[in-house]
Image (cartoon, rainbow, N blue to C red; front, side):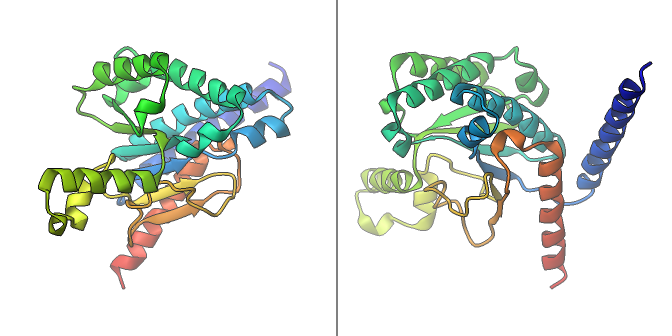
Length: 259
């Protein structure tokens, strides 16, 4: 065997061992039950690597599969993804069409036969102002949600045509319509009418190094939500990176327990 092939194989085994060690270490402590991701930096990744925007988003989709698998293996139960905001409709039509095609394609693969869906018994929920989407995208959403609606394992919330402020406004309208009395509007009643519902958000992670929420899950980010901003583009974000973040989360929770 060529020396470089040998080194590659050796390093590959070392990485697998380290990754397994991190997962086993994480299993010994508390794990966030609800983690959200602002998957930022796909276009910047495309520019940095001189590839098309579509290829950049495709690389991001591949990274997502690894992140979901790792988080669920560690014990996370719910993951929420900021996939497409209401403001994204203001982008050039070409970019919007690319994102919609990628979303449609990704959802088309997430049926009962998808390895990730089968492994974690995933239930896929697509949340937001879906009435703004085209019929072909809505058909893909409906097919995936129906195919996984009876699954009782992990949950993936895919936020499309979504912003936090719009979600809050929608919840207020629903609460008033249900009760008929403004006095019935409480934090609990609003939470029950949010797109997300429960459980509370434990950890929000944003890639690309940008320090802002971008109108994502404003209601769900409460006083106990940890926010991590990572200085890398989403397609570069991997298993090792999420493992270290979860370890830091555990160490913070452990420190609080002794205060």
